[in-house]
Length: 371
Image (cartoon, rainbow, N blue to C red; front, side, top):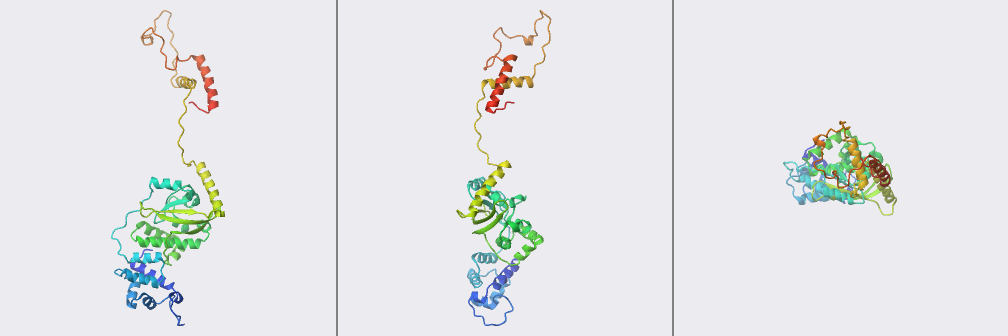
């Protein structure tokens, strides 16, 4: 599916010329049989103010060296849109000898915080339309896309059978997606990732081959889309795309419903479903933990008694004959009072049982589990 830059220029200009009628160009229809759809080369040359031979050279792909004024004149004659004009100018520029820097595959932490602070669905994607980041509503809106190991808008549209039901106008979604991919390929023809994606789609998707052959170009900036979400139903949304200044090649897409519309009610339902699903999956945003409450003295003593008896049980004392002095290691170093901790003397067995009962009552009351 790869082609040279000359072939790309030729096919693009021929396809644009075929889309312009005589009426659109302001030329009279003399009723002669026309062997080609749209305008003839000489008619485009006349409208652009260049010779037929010069325009023929341009249409054969020899655009390098052509001035911007000539290219703008050709764009006006062919009634190119702003995106198509930019695409033509990009094809006329000399190709870089080295590929551009690779687009980052992760977003900065500050960008993720901004996404999470938005109250509308938001996603971050690159030139290949790989989904790199999103907020909670963005993951909910494109939940089918995020089921893939590497979520990608283009692959979902052309290779996932559920896309036919998800997009209200699936053929239009296919056409625009292929046009966006062609526009990005023209901006960075040495991008190996985009080239590989085009080859993959051309091999696996007949619909992509049809749309790719139209040579349309498109760039997502703003507009309206209608989705059929599997949970909340139809969503008619306005989208806005913002380029990320700190990370070239990445864009943020946001989606909002008209206030008071059925889609706005569906978005409220989507937010509820998203929060429930994330909570069940254990992915809900973490909150700052409250400081631990101090443990009462009796509960602490109870814990100490359990530890001593379960972890380090004392061996049974060895019997001594009456009148035999104890071993030196068991003799007190001084006739002072028995050692005691700051919590008071260590309680005996009867007192331990009492403390254990008190601790169990406290645990059932305060929902504190002591191990």
